Image (cartoon, rainbow, N blue to C red):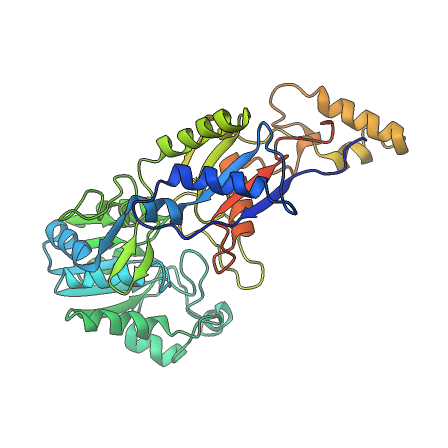
Length: 399
């Protein structure tokens, strides 16, 4: 084995992106300067991957919308009367401003919260408390009064926020009336109104289907709100409000749109500048779950909305420990290294169903690389909105 370094993931520091910035030049310049750094520099290689957080792409595009824009779209599409908002996640960053906009566009919101946790694992109450009370979250629907009587005033273990009170007050501040119910059957909201917005993310198709089949007259998802410009606002024809983030108290930044040209242009510029063919992707939340708090860090509709062609597909890998413990269990040292390297080098076709590939997690490459990038860049003050990954497509047989 002549090589001792495998995959390397680097956070690339960059200036703050502003609306209207040339994001292609911004990324290429940042990577170029990082590669030339006297202490931390690196050599650009074929099959390297440049990963760009969606936040700076949406910001450069100026893909913003205000509370008033959201309100106008909601009113136009729902009629502005009593509207159910079903299964929102508990998040000041991801949903609060969206909720404010929805509330400003209607007379009353019937807010249905799932329990004991939201879709992405934020706990409203403890599962043990639900069990102790003999409640069945799949069938038992609670009013706000019943919820308070049974659970009291619960705050999120990390943010310290009582999201029930927070969302209730937020709606009231807009001038809309509010009624809150708790339950995991979306059809419960139809006892209050036949107009509903499915505010969940990944489970929204099921929620919308159930509501429609149960007789709702109007059913929208967050992806249906701001799917087109409103009074010159930003928009996203594919995801609407899904993937949006709080920008200010009355403005959201939407998920990037129409950015295949961006990743392809960066790829072309890198080839022209370095003579190397790199892959490029834009990433949002990584698809992983925290083992301590149970939160599934995936509030975006997809991990990567835009990427170059070389990132299509899934890994096709052999499990080294399986080979060592089974096929080559009688070998050791350099003989074992050579045998495993040869087996990897000679693998052909899909390994799906092959015992030697079990446990290799055949997820989409963009989901895996996006999760690695999200963990590398973080979500706070690291200042590394670009992640540069090397050696991801190499294996034990690569020299």
